[in-house]
Amino acid sequence: MIYTVVYEKIIDPNFPEGYYYAHIPTLDLTTNGYGIDGAKKAAFDLVKLSIEEKKANGEQIIGEVESFSSTIELEDALFG
Figure 1 (cartoon, rainbow, N blue to C red):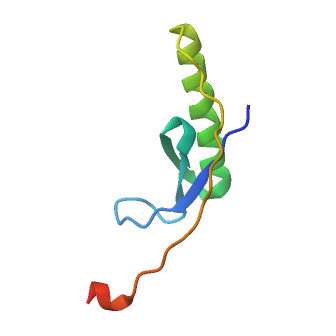
Figure 2 (tube, helix red, strand yellow):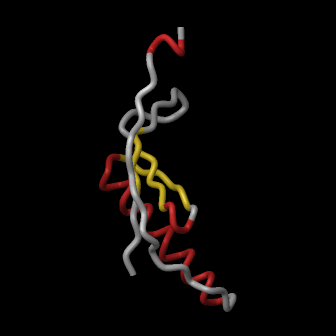
C-alpha cells in the first residue's frame, strides 16, 4: 500500500533543532523524527504498527484516497 506523508519542520522551543512532523492524512496519524529521513522512518513504523493493530482487531484497513496539497498566504497586516 502507498500512503501520502506530509512533512513539516517543527518550530517549537520544547523540541530540539532539526525535527520534523510526518503526517499521514488518510490514516489521521502524526509522528516526528530527526530530519526528513528520521520522520519518514517514524511514519513508516507508525503506519505498519497501525495496520498490524487493525488486522489483529478485525478492523478495515483504509487505503490511500485521492489527495491534493496547496499553500495559502495571508497578508502580514492580518497579524499586526
